[in-house]
Image (tube, rainbow, N blue to C red; front, top):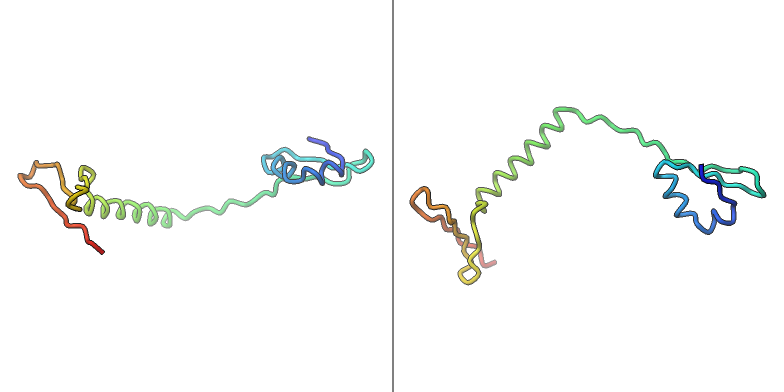
Length: 102
């Protein structure tokens, strides 16, 4: 445990709080006698319901699928024509999507 006198504690309070937050308690003394102790506050962890976690991950996956449909991973933006073109020609065609001007 780190021990600091009151005058130094007042001058370096933010540093001492950082030490306490990291798990290192700090003892504050006045005239050599301990008068206070800074420690981290234990914050309780709330358990996450499995159904909530699944709903969150499913929504992230759906958003990712929607973005891939709008902007395929192999698409590049043509700077002069403002079009997205796909270099994947396995279907026998090149997909074009006109980018809005607004």
